[in-house]
Length: 348
Image (cartoon, rainbow, N blue to C red):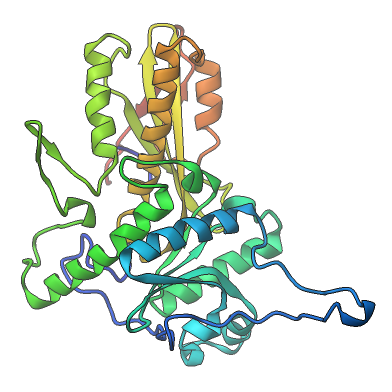
C-alpha cells in the first residue's frame, strides 16, 4: 500500500499498545434515548405537521441494518439523538456547546443491559455539499475527538456492499467495536503485552480446509480468490492497492483504489471510508476492503464477458481525483496499462 494513510487510531489501543483514554460519553438511561417530534393533531380538520424519523433512504437503511445486528448481539439503537443527550458537554466551549444542543447523531448504538454507548453513526455519507454543512461535519468530528466519542461516518457504498459473513460494511464495523473494547481492556490488564499489535480482525483466526480463516476480516477470503484468478490466467498479476485522501468527502476521509491488469486493459476497484473518530480498525483498512470487494465483482464480470477494462487515460483520470502524497506520479504510458510510480525522496 502507498500514499497517505490518515491517523485514525486516536484514543484506541490499536497499534498503540496502551488502553484508550476514558471518554466523556453518557450512558443511556434505559438503553434508549428519547426522540422528540412536533406533532399537531389531525382532529378538527387540521393538517398533521409530523417530521419523518429518517431524513433520507441512507438513514433508513442504516437503521434497519444496525437494528437487525443489535437484536442479535445485545445492543439497542436510537435515532436522531442530540449530541447533548449522549455527551458530557461541560468540557466544550460556548460555540461547541451551542452546536451540541442543536445537532444530532443519525444513529447511536448502546448496550441493552447498562445503556453504555458503544458508538454513534452518521450514514448520510458524502451527501453534504454546501460549505456550511461541511463546516458542521468537521465541527461534529472535532467534538467527538475532544470527548472521546467513537463516530462512524459511512456513505451509500458501505451500506450496500455485502461482505463475507456481514450484511454490509456498517455491520462489519459495528461487530468490531466490542472486540476493540476487549482488546483495550487486555492491554490495560497486561494480558496483551504492550509491544504486541492486535486488531479486532485478528480474533477468531483458525484453519479451515488447510488455510487460515479470518472470520472478522472479510478481505482475506477475497485476496485468496485473487491468487486463483492470477493462477487461472484471468488477471496478469496480483492486484495492487493505493491509498490517498479524498477531497470530495465533506469531513475528510481516505479512499483506496484496487487495480487489476488484464490483457486488454485495467480494472479499477474503488472504496472510500469517511473520517470519523476512534474507529476499531484503521480507516484505510475499511476503504481497502470496499475497494477489493468492488474489484472482485469487476473481475467476475470481466470473466463473464460483461465488463470492458479501462484504457490508461480513463484509469489515470479516475485516480487523479484523489489527493496523493508527494512522490506519486501517473503516466498513461504507451501500452494498454498505465504507469504508476512512487518516488521516495527521503529526508535531507
